Image (cartoon, rainbow, N blue to C red):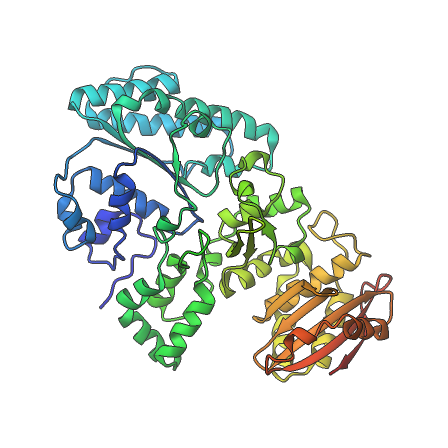
Length: 520
């Protein structure tokens, strides 16, 4: 029987408990040789904490835990270093008082472990002197590991008044690292985003950010080969439980959980948390979203007036990913760092990344999360309507689908303070339709570029491609004529699926669909 380490973030517990471990120790060795100051950004629930724990075990000289793994043949010394392993993931109340108290508590634990006296009540001095005293006492350089370094900052990212004092506090905590170079063997810092204005980045000019380097694209997550090498029993059991062949299981796993790409032209990886959960439960669920979408993301969307319909397929320059998170001018890097977007392509000629949703789980899960902000707070009503619309689409009955949508939208009152556009704009209605169609587990795109313009909505099911044009207070004839005049359907004629053109009229007065016409 295979034991899947869901939620287990300690390398020692996984190895001693007989849990499945996908060998990442070749990456561990490569990062440490000759690396000294290293930063890695990855989305939540992506294995950052387990990786940090693996560094802890490695530098602690725990050779017994690495038996049979790649690093066993690479490392010859297995030298034991004193390790200071900080975890900031629980600092989420958004107050500097809580953050400072937590950091002092962790420093106190290390002082007890290594038999050192408290040097000062001041955070900077206490940390600096602790490293020096441990190094002198052990006659060894010290390893510093900082997991989820940005957790306290993400909690207050949308609130500039609280962000600045939090940033100042953490700056004072991290600042000694630069001057402790001679006492440090290795520093590893991990988190979701990159706050460049912190001294940890502005002063550590030798910090190696490996987040988007192709050779480390698979350091977290599960590659296609790792899936096939390590999960054969789970794939078989998943197939039996869901009456699917092995090929069907692999296809569905890829569709739901694969697609994360952290560098141009690099291999994609599966979301490890979702993959392990699917194997454990023998069910293809939306596990990553069940653990909660960070509230800071929704707040930042509101702050930037993000157009939801423009996110998938958006483009970003490399320098945008390296911009300070707290001073960013676009929400795209944060969407990417948080795992809601990934790299789909890179154009070296214009030096632009094309971004998109990595997989079905992320797209559908994000839409479900955003329903209260774009459509209605009555999530149960939305779920019921979406289920009925889905059944209509499975019968290729677009008439019934739009009838359901019309009734649904007509009963929704306008919500003040949501993420949606003004209730009389075409963008508002497009966003609502986009969210609802995305809910249906089909591929939906908005504002799709063509040679002669942009179509409002492109939707693909297993049997049909729908080319949809919306007109606010216009006519359905105008909408269908635009589809033909602009040639929106032409690129899909060789697809093999039936192409259906749909003209839709929204009424700004009635705030719903009032008419539609379907043509082929």
